Image (cartoon, rainbow, N blue to C red; front, side, top):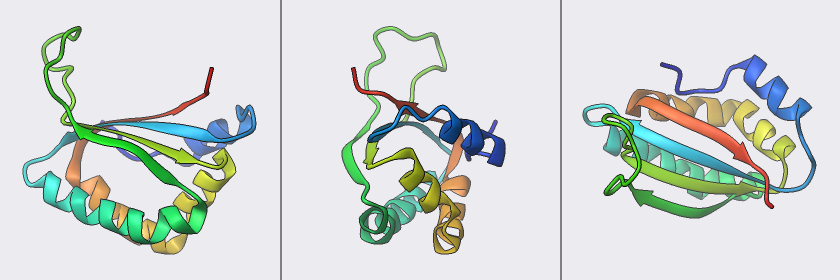
Length: 120
């Protein structure tokens, strides 16, 4: 199961850009010991990369009671991160320093959803 976007994913992400800010929905399922690794990644993201690229965590929280979900569809954590544009997000993930840190995220997760959202 993929946890990181591929080049073709980012190309489509930029091609489908409606313009303006984007809020990225993150649904996360942790590997054993993954929470600690993800916490290290989140610290680097918050301290360095979000300020550098204009991002802002709107919400971060643990999954809780699933009211409408099949068995196994529950998520361990949910994040909403706002970026000023899809291009800013793309520049962040292409940053060589970010690519070194994102290995922590990759190791921390067994499954993830990373989906761009558009405001209504």
